Length: 480
Image: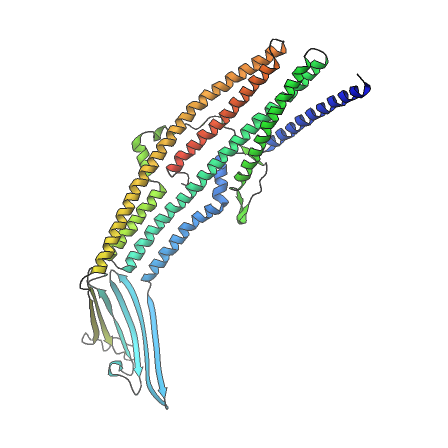
């Protein structure tokens, strides 16, 4: 062998050794970063979402809007103060001056109290506008004896606004339910990616250390040179898996960071501050949900179903209001009139001084009113059918994910045992290899099977946890 070839072999060996050192160093740095990272549980993740996520804030706005709607509806019962002044002057003559003020106070079903004061003067007043020099005061009531006696636009508005409050609360729960369910899927995908990444990092560390040991043994003649090739192939295979796992983990972290917001609606930057919290044992506290009566009760409180119920209640108020339109309009007003004497408004009070009036109106065929009632009843029936169908769909989904959760729990137990068995086979094969009774090919094969089993277990745990949170999602409980 020439000197040139000897130098090439020497430096090639040095470079490979350096590459191994770099790989081991990068793995050690990565492990150090992971050790300094903060474990983030899914409950803590949910708390961060509830605290600052824009959609969480949007959900809370729903209740504020409903409160404002109720305030607006109650405003229709506010006392109303009104007044007017109309004057006409021409050719140095005061044709008329009409001053009228009034306060109207709604106090009950179809009943308003009114009071006011008017004083008119001028050379060309109409007879109906004449008032004494001190003006006239009046007070009285206005009552609806037909339409509006049992329900009117004002009372219907208040009841509707109260229903909207309940609906808004359910809508808020639904929005949070959807948001947290999406976040739970993202979290467990992040968890899976992290676990796979850790599995490959540890496997690469073991493969590199084994490769170095084989190279040393080959150099002193205790191993065939071909074993070093086999060891390097295993490193390359694991590095390919690690590269994909690292990319998946980084991408999962970026998606996860999209759910973590800081104050002032600022999204946090993706970083390695957090790692998933390790799971000691999958959740198994759903035994009380297994009976059908409990499932039916659970589904019955779903916020989406509650919104449909409140929609039906709102339509029922609309139906009552439209049925009230079948009655004739009969409005009666009675206002005693008083001429003030000085500051005393009651000196000349007499029941013989009054204004009164009655208003009557009634469509002859009531086709519009009957059509409105029919449309509202059909809308109620439509929403009742939607409620029934959605209830059954949610119940079926809930049962599907309970079954998936139970099945994956059993599969996790199976895979945990499989992982232990694969580990035993891998360790045993390494021992046989160390004493020269096995080949590196078998060791690598056992190791790959062990890696695949651990990855499959991590995937199964993530799948189980997604099924677990799917149960609470379809029960409508994540946003509660």
